[in-house]
Image 1 (cartoon, rainbow, N blue to C red):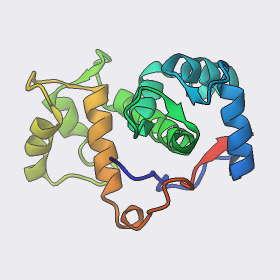
Image 2: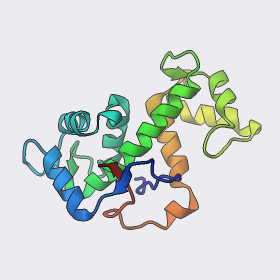
Image 3: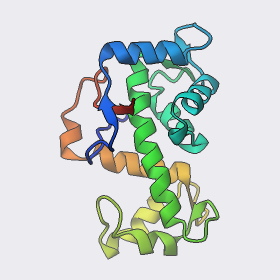
Image 4: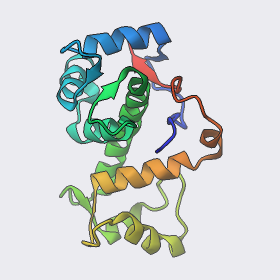
Length: 178
């Protein structure tokens, strides 16, 4: 299980942290079935309606799957804070993935990954590039898909020293446009 992510950059213009009360109200707004948990469909529809600039199915799916710490295919109130954090993180990762994917085919080749290795948040030494690519390519197909790349990026981010000390999963630092 990954810890809550804190963006390593300052929040984009117009983003502010949400209080616990504001998060609760936002969760209630997202919970259209009023059953106390969000399905993938509810999360996707609510993000599209409330935050269209984050309406990326791949980023939403990755954020949802990562925040679902209970493994019940739903986001509960406690997991909702994680979902918001991961939505921001994986949206950023999708933007990076698209920049690295030079031919726009939705998958990274070793050559594309090598060309971008120095642009990554924590640059890779030339000797690490091939090893990391093989590690990311879960199925050994010679390509890295977004979900593989996003999982790898999250694990690298989770290893940052300032994140290792975070233990309060209920109060991650995140920001939302208002």
